Image (tube, rainbow, N blue to C red; front, top):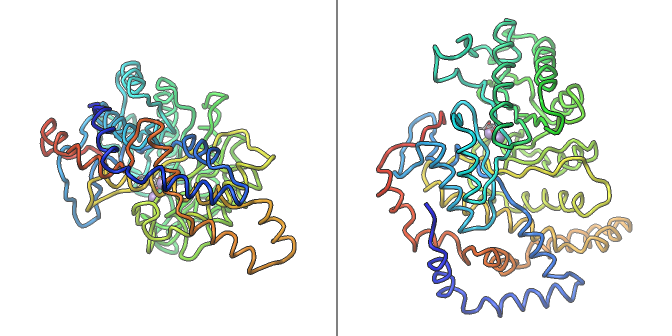
Length: 432
Ligand code: PSV
Ligand code: MN
Ligand code: MN
């Protein structure tokens, strides 16, 4: 489904009475601080965030699922939904697939369809945290109940390795260039497993998969300290993740999911450390109050998000570069909101935090830090955080044909109603 561009422009007209005035005010304010608002707008436009295929349907808690209707049931429909998000926000131009939920049987056609919406394929996600829903059709049909790559049984490890190699093959046909590996592997009770043997098995499995990757591909490993295993996980924190990445190969990098940290972890410092080691893959953005809550980006800890972007901007504007482009993706799951509305809110929150970090006068910050001006440094970054940069983001969106207010336009154009009319009340096919 494609939205009518003129309808988006009409929505904009109704909302943007004061837009130019607001844009001029913030641009003048930034100008006084030596910051060029045009450059900020250009940077915002460049920050494209991938949409995960599994976030397009209503998420579930372990207690229930309450689908809202019109959800995409096929890969083609998921691509179409991301096309709508791109039209409205201008902020997403790729989709990230999870195998086996999104098997592209006809990869060439799927690729062409995506291209017709201006979309490409972001990182390919393997899944050895569930048994393959196709059951008997799987190569060996062995269970991951006691882990996948960490498993004591070689046959299970081989099945997990082969699954990842299959995912690379699908990705090659779609034009993707990275594989994301998140493992549920670990243990639930003391005495269940040997920490060291589990780690060595995972390391060995990752090395075997890495050898099968094309030379221009990257592997992203994603750590998580808990869930679904609650006593230990194999790739539990950024330190273990860095060990695994370094032990696997130069093009194996550490992915940071914002929900995958123990309470009060200084995530921005984790980001700085991983960048220092030139091993940052990118992000799975979401927000949380307690654990891996997968809530809307910026809905609970917007200041933390801004501080993370502060570290990222320091890297992006600095001289020392990694060999990879950073991968930006949302990894959220919505059980009480329309998933498309929630994604639009997340894109907006990411752009906001990025823009706030971009307007920090960096040379001045470095000087204040060098002179140990504690209050001065704090004031400087808080001033950036408290600047209303929304006119810059709206301008960036509209320059790409997007909406002044994507959520308002989504509602005004009755997108969900149109999707329900076309697809009925069926539920999206993901395992979440
Ligand atoms: C696990 O919690 C995770 O964050 C991983 O990225 C998965 O691939 C994703 O959620 C979807 O299950
Ligand atoms: Mn994730
Ligand atoms: Mn997660």
